[in-house]
Picture 1 (cartoon, rainbow, N blue to C red):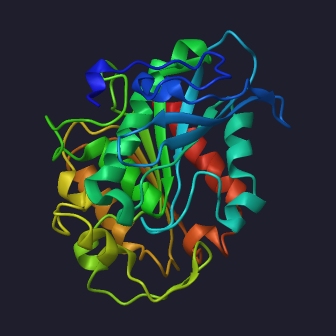
Picture 2: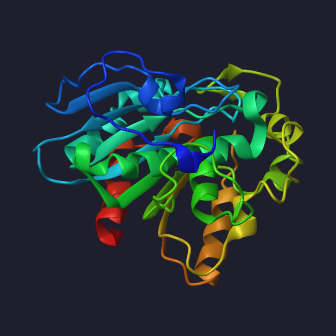
Length: 311
């Protein structure tokens, strides 16, 4: 179904409609009140490409009502082959990272995307872009500020956030999802320990025991590459660094085993070389998903402080 023929609504929708209605065909309950007083819109379909499963998001909007809130779109990690919007790595969940975002006045939308063996690449990148456009299309209905949309990803989610902000390889390509009239460019990006150079990643043997997925012998970057016609260089965010990219906040731990710190150091060096707005936070001794970090809340606070500065 071509995106230009679609429309969507976040109005109360208790009954299913014809599939020709796109995302509006899928019923969803009214919002509920969350434990922090926010409105929670759960299990909302934002994209439904023929032949693929519908993609869902969960949106949390803080009070007060009637005032537009900046929006963080949370992109989960999992090496492009695992994960869901419904699951935070245990260490991040225990520290309530999304609650801290809400407390700072941000709405938070956790989005799903098609994994590598479902649609390959760039399918998942198109899904992230579709989520940005769809949420902007709903902004007036749910008190979101369409001018202050942030992509915040951890691990492979950080990679997707960077690619959605910087990759030019899809310019002019057909889009998935709805609201083609909306911009898909984020106002800023927060990248937590995302892989940025997949050529290097494919050549280095790192530890495979991750809090995100447990022990696995699979090489996620190889699976991503196998399910894409793109080269490792084309899959790398460092390839697309140029003047005019959105502001980027990068954070990485020096003891990262799954994604080596060199990924973030090289990305930041390239961004600074072109005059991009970038802040870099390096956490001594911290591993993937901030294990062994002295204070996860302080890392969240630093990330939010950057957003307050650039939005």
